Amino acid sequence: MRRSTLMGRRLVAVFLAGCFLYYSPVISLLDRPQELLGLPVLYLYLFGVWVVLIGLMAWIVEGSDQ
Image (cartoon, rainbow, N blue to C red; front, side, top):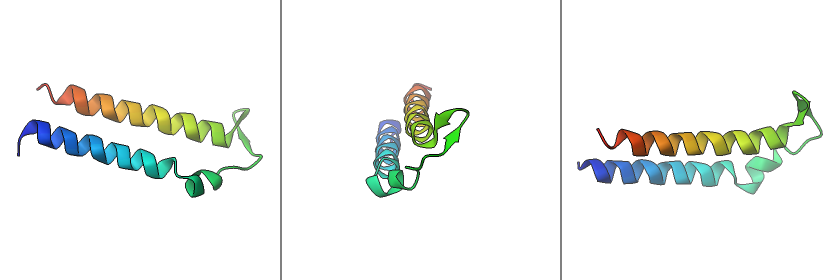
């Protein structure tokens, strides 16, 4: 399989994972008045998922040059 095709498939998988993780029923599980480290759990989840998705995309794209 060509490397660009594999990279495309991985990026699509990251996109679909992001769609699932930001899906309203999944987010509503964390919509509670609890705090962790002084921040609402929902905010930590949203920004944590965002950082992980960007990191995965960067890792996939940077690894395709080799």
